[in-house]
Image 1 (tube, rainbow, N blue to C red):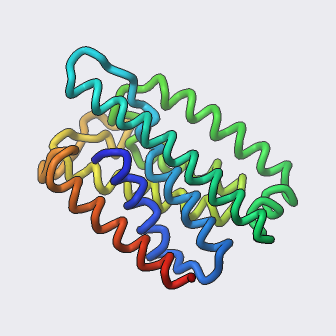
Image 2: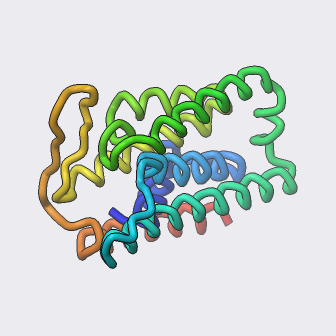
Length: 202
């Protein structure tokens, strides 16, 4: 699936499973869901060998940038409105530093991996989620949900993922292509659920 779809699905799934009841909880679900939703695609390299490869690889990059922009904006808004997310991270900064270091190491490993390989596995999902839990437990839970939604959505694609890495071979359901109708339906569903929850908070 495409970057926007993974972000929308990650946030929407985090909203549904975490049931945020205030602005800070909404911020936590949004940050974790959006970053987790695109994190598995950190293994995508810019490929200019053909038009499709270039568009797909640039989409992954734009998705990561969009998730970062969303997260920074939401965290800043929560902080300025007196929310507790950033103070919570600061209050246990030692664990946050350890989590950030682990997250950085895993990201470097992921960037040097083949697409749909290490980062698209249950092992990567577990390790990345642990690193974010160390930074902030609530965001870590939302991140795990968002990352999980990415792996589940990619199973519907016609290209296999190595879900059980380091075991050889990949799996997929071969239901749809990443950039066609299935992608649009998942995107629309995610946006609808996100909008519903946000309006409930107003």
